[in-house]
Image (tube, rainbow, N blue to C red; front, side, top):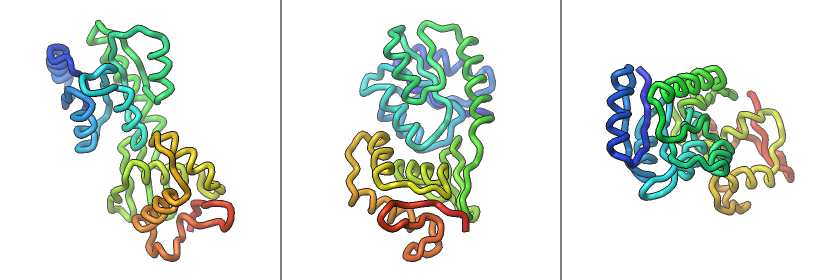
Length: 224
């Protein structure tokens, strides 16, 4: 049974949509704001996120950005705004679809199914050595045991594994992490993240075999 996270501060709409989706065989978890939405996302695994753009305690853009830092789960914006700039911003942030209110429930259902089908086709497991990443679920496993990473550690690992056997310069890594976190990432901060990541995925963090240092240039993920 597919599990849906609905982040919507219009209680009546949320109630009606939850009732409809439940009748269609979905499990729906409702959160009424940015804070509760992010907490709900951290607490479980979802097949799709329906996300109101305007939330009482924040923005749907912020929620989408946080989700995209750790997961490729389909995200569909629900909004009363038909502004083109908002639509473009949503897609650039990684949203899979954008539907304007008021909408027909069955149209939303069709778009959800399409987004989940695309996601199931495009999200394949990424692996290197004995570590695997499931981008759709945002789960990292080492020898069959789940490894718990912070959002930036996860993003860093995605970058390494997506470019395995290729040199990743320090400048490129700091720029990528900066764009995800929205905060400046210094060389020292990058060192800390590399160290923490090695402690979680390497058999011997002092003698790394997965993420190796290319002296004077950067790092590289390698197959052992």
